[in-house]
Length: 222
Image (spheres, rainbow, N blue to C red):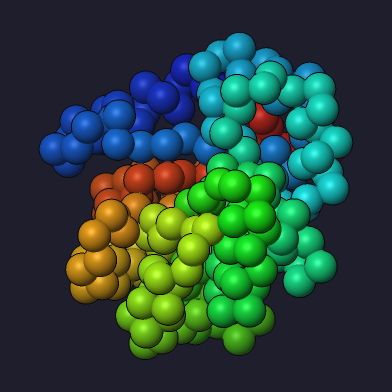
């Protein structure tokens, strides 16, 4: 089932990109694997997935011990201060930076490990009080602060999008994310991490470069 789902989603991404004048190679499909087994990860890997997203540091580290070594691991969960340096030294990309103190810890962890980690600023695009992420009006200032930190490389912006909306209902928020990114005008900052199982098609139409898909790949968790 997983292999077939991977095939269908990749085909769908190609069709969406073709219809809106984009190249499917621009899209990074991230398999969201919170709560999934190493066996499920291996099946997705064998089907061609190379980017996997985890929400918790310790869970990710356990899985990595038995997973293929060339996987690019993305951190897509909330970052605890006591794990920030370790996350900075261990992941290929981090999608949930929304505080300067966390960003500095991540940067220090990466720098001390002799590496540079790509990061996204998490944006609370609908300004929902129960969610993390910075508000849209703070993005430009925050991006400039992150852009100069050694150890990290600012890649772009990320959002979860507001809950309980249809894919079309969320489209205006994805469009606003694209406009925020374009307004930054920072060299090399050109990625948008947005869109999940129910919304990735609209997200790609509105400029997403990274989509995080769990249920549509692996099925519902029991």
